[in-house]
Length: 81
Image (cartoon, rainbow, N blue to C red; front, side):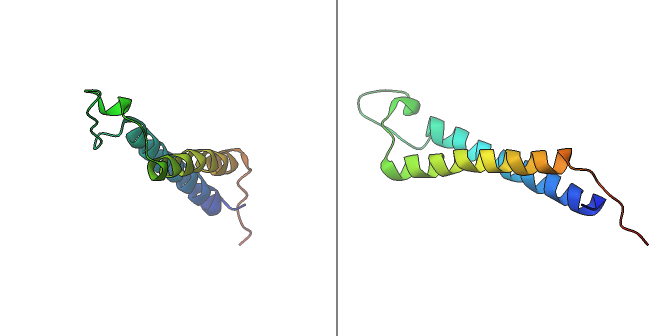
């Protein structure tokens, strides 16, 4: 893998993992949700569609970390000129 590809894979993996982690945290706390039985929005029951988005985001964190690890732990080889 060339150094340029290694850098691209590392940045892409880190970006995917970061964005997916932010989405997971936001969906965990659900700041937009209100429920009559509790004051805290995190205590409200999660809707099935919200759970699907959160599960997808959690999978995205794992995929992003694998891509990041691939970029970090592969050897960068300079292309011959």
